[in-house]
Image (tube, rainbow over all chains, first blue to last red; front, side, top):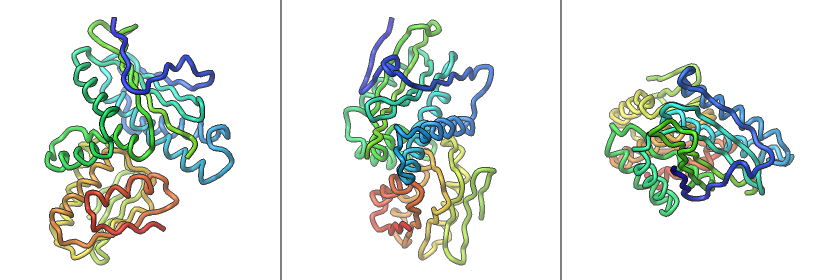
Length: 187
Length: 113
């Protein structure tokens, strides 16, 4: 039984109010445009809550854009890396912050690589890592992924990130990865 | 020179040495290749100056940000082009992510309206 957290992970059960969406991508392939539509729907939904954005129109636009950016990135990742199982997206508000979580299943063999990646993100200086990553990407044009999704959430959106690995309810040989981004609503 | 889809359009106006980015750019990393190729082709024409016109680019995902930052590095390595970015204060991602261009190309002039 695997149960492990990295960074600032918070259980969603502790939230009173949240929205969740479950995708079944094995029977209904999720495409990039659909990740974008999911992000925009939830961003619009939460931007309409005055408890999130207040009455300031500029603030609403800024928060809606931030939610949309972060959600789009975590949903894209969950869809891109899922290996069977469902993809679950949950968004809720707690203590002046928006909690965004995407959950997807990966092969257990991926765990060591993911753990190393996530631990580097929460222990290093994200601005420094971002610089190094882009310079490395420029030197390797065949690089498959940019690796900038989580980094830009940290550097540009002041997000806090956390992950949970859990084998509960997973297909044998697989683990669920819960990725959480905590986005401050107060600037 | 132009790359377009239902959601976005990227094109070069040689007379004004301006690259226009418009719409919503949320593609997979590999799907940015045609845009990267377009940017490299523009660089090969050895323009004295280039303007990156971003006023109408509502969204850019992290793979797109990677494409843009890598172009800034290519411009730095080429070392001859005077680069200006025209950004919009009305589009939140631009004030957050475009400033980083200066880290990759210190001489870049970012003008926000």
